[in-house]
Image (cartoon, rainbow over all chains, first blue to last red; front, side, top):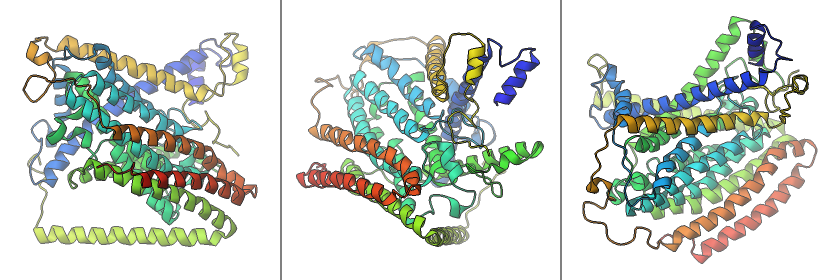
Length: 413
Length: 155
């Protein structure tokens, strides 16, 4: 990229080494990429809002939005336009200033996560040496936004929802942080790209199948991420039957939509983070990229571009797979109670995640002494995972056969 | 061999060479170590500006027909009673305290986690492991204490 920008500057007839505006060009391109990333976040959130309703319709044997465009795909654009043209209400009793800026906090905290999230082998806005730590820190801004919105609304439902949500998010931040520690331990770096480079393209090289504790850590992280994103079965802050709508009760129009943009966009964030930390990220089969040797950079000409696109496709596929699982969970599991949610976190996930960290640290020392054990463990776990998936697949096919389920793509779904 | 683990390389915004900074007499002595964090600042500002701009756009586009009913806080259709900022259960306060304790501890564990691999290479692996074991044992005692005291019981 530096080479590209430098050649661009040379094309304008300047020497990038001496030209005064070189730094400005860099900052301008940072701005451009940041703009692209914010739009990417907003558009994915919009598309997920449509996809989720379609998935929900399918899972509950109903239709879902199918009027606007093919399969109702333009529904999310229609919704965005509708929300833009809605009245922006601020209750008289509310703390005007805090009420207005609370959604901005949520959006800014959410957008900042994308700085460190990788998209492909090269495509990451900033490769920081503290990437994971940064992501954990920046997501905390969302809690600030939630508390602000709940407190400033001056409504009982909002405040109850906000306090519940804050308690839930901060509780689950501990197991999530400890679970994310395991890839950090194994790779020895906090950089998101570095963690992917320390893994490989094949499942037995991923950290999820590294040892039993990292396998458990993946699920601990996934459960905690669901809770942090206020997703079912942890959507207590938005429990309609108890709290109307939780912390966003008093919001309307565009400010309201920010909360939901963050909620749907978070599905991408948590899935992308799970992919990065445990599932080998963007690694392309046969073209492993490690700290020592970068097989993609060694390719020439068009093959580099092709490999780059392949790495984007692989990363997106893995991420979207987990986004689908998150939607699937939402329409499968009922909401749990507050005490169950707290027990789950403090009595199960916290001790197990601490034990997992100690186990992985010990296991690292053991395999340092006996490297053969590493491969045996990886292969056994990968085989176990593969057998589970095959069994699941066969079972699904059997169910489809038994119920005679069909999907008709011809009639606008 | 190109080592791509250092900050600022491999991403889209490489760190500017110090030679270049000296060459262009701009006086911005940008700490090259901090350069990978510059996109955060740019994105932070841009996200804030975009949020405000879109909301402004929405206020221009949307109708303004304010009534007293619309502006009142929602309480299932009946008039609001009592102070919304009434006292809350102390349980939430306890959760906040526990969070502070455990989250600060996990912040301490992170540097150890990032370094264990290197320490292992230096033959200090088991030493580092037992050091952290003692730290975590302290934490575990804390968790057991809190559990026994009933701070984890929600009902």
